[in-house]
Length: 388
Image 1 (cartoon, helix red, strand yellow):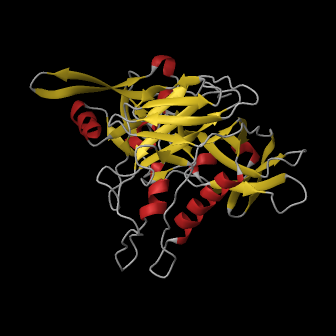
Image 2 (tube, rainbow, N blue to C red):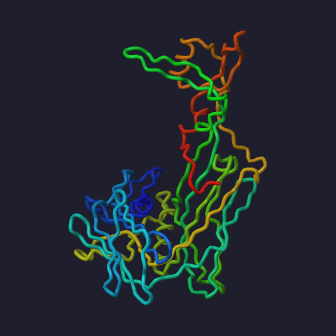
Image 3 (cartoon, rainbow, N blue to C red):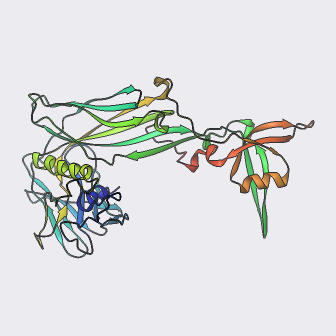
């Protein structure tokens, strides 16, 4: 996704708690500034460039730059064109970059404006040694470990994707069978799932999130090019670690200028919190508009390999984690057409049998609010391909 909102906060931030209106230090064009995010990936894996437009506060809608021509150019006159795979997202499955050649990004928008980043040497990112975690009373902290034995990298940037499995508060082997009736309320019947088994499709689900903060690190002032830094904190009793959690970390080597750019962004986004804090400064990266070099463009495109590592954290290794979905206890309902229909329209779902009649049919059953029974109301029941 385009995370231009982070950049926009840095440029236009006027935190809603402030009493005084914040006026941006530069006037924004009606179309907003072009926001460029991504890395020309010199390693294994796709190159993904995301284009958007900045928007002034209090607007929050992301504006994506569609229909652009996005290319990677080499100093040897080589050109590779990226494909727009979704609005504002441009991708190439695998670049093959030559040794000794410098590369840059070239963008031509539908309005005819052309933008280029600076030609850069290829940077090789060292591997991630490990991703570890520790736990205390406040929750779980996740750390990145990496090092460059040649002491050449010095500047790093990390992004991550989180995925977690969770379960509904109540499992069930009952369901409502709904039959539409023209011009009348539907017929809703209580039925037992095949073989009386738990309905896993509404009990086991997954959610996910991507990093939103700027995670960077530098070893420039250290004798060894070795990093050990926290990149994520998960609060005690969070849903994320209620069953099984995964974090997929991407690491990219930065140039010194690239690091300084993201450092300014990070400082601005974190410091603007009241009228007494420093206001956001104008942020320029390494991208210019060839039609109008004075135009502000937000972003810094590196030419660097990207490395990654995935780890899992199992709830069974977190005794006393304490997550519990807040749900009202199930209520007892008479199994007749009117009561079942009323329960259905109230958004409830059946969770168990309370009693049966002499002939074995269900007399009374228990039902709870749907969100506590059907996990798909909060996420997806599609198991990720990398999930164990």
